[in-house]
Length: 525
Image (cartoon, helix red, strand yellow):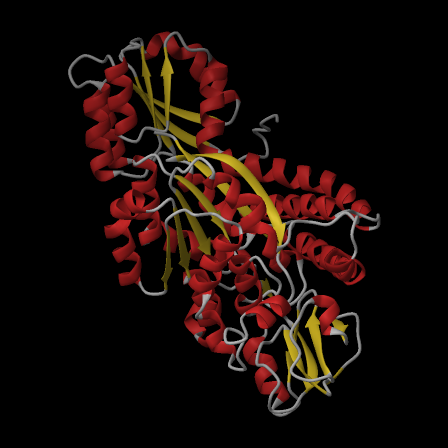
């Protein structure tokens, strides 16, 4: 990309070099590109200039007489800590490079240098975000048409996963650009994609569960058998970490930090079952069974109390391993509070020695989505997906989970990171009427004589058994909200519609809820 100095902001750069006169051609070249150079010949002169004037960047020669470049750098950073500094030196000594990098320089150039090297360094330091933003916007506009054409085709479940991952990629790229000019276009494309994806699920989900020979994705109840049991065959320790409610974009936010200690051996996905909630999807995952099968096999687990259905995951997991004749020592832990997480970190070494398979559920992301619905301050902190990802990243960086992963990497333990379902930001209220036994979830309703607005925003299941869903009576049906819809009762409709608008919910049908990450990590050590 060419730098048009007539249109760009003029930059002012201090250049300290005891041979500055020999660099006159370089200075003339840069000034012709719209960069004003203030030359000095010593570290002391550089300090004086920095104290009396403001600069956008500083070029420092390391081998100046008197005060060296590194000494000058240290003094400048003491009162101008954020100013970008480029170190220029004849030396290629590793120790000098390391000291300069440790002092947080922005770039490192080795003499002899040419004017284009300097120009490139200026672009990288001072125009990086603008150049990246323009490149991102251009790239997305080129991809926009391809994605829109894909929505109109009859995609397979694998192709839909590819579309979703591409949308996540561009969404994260656009969120990092200046001005976010493409954000509105991106949001419109998300809506169209989810509308078509919802139709895809309506047309295919029942067939995946009942018809042999059809092309179908990996589903929640197949994850342990297909993905995890093969890892246990070598009888080497595996930590299975389930982060409740973790979307694919949130995984991509955590990935750069996690891969400081691990290689990604496999990054794939699976499709969460319906409803995309903890009591259905997570129980199915640990049991290796669909909810209707769990109810029949373990009736005490599937009680009428929604809240108590999540209390038996360890039992379901142990029974799953027993059914598959997997006789490895196993542990199960659920982390809801910080102290529980710290306890797992403290036990990590002994868990590795005692067990082959250690399953740990971290509930923070799910708690965050619920708390955001109830606390206005969290809505302010996380008004959209980008901010929601940022809070997830902030939690992870200071969480026991990161401490645990560092220990596992140091001990050479392989790790699986996955989730039970994702979540979607909702903003379209749909009226529903049910009796007092109807469940409280905003993205799906289960009950008798459900009354609701018939629309493309709703998927109705009148024969739950075909979807392997339990029924309280012969007249029980399920309805699922699709895209960005959520259910609200007519009583005090406007009040509750406003409370939950723009909240993150799960239980229904959207790419964000259904297509979820599965990652296998190998320690770098």
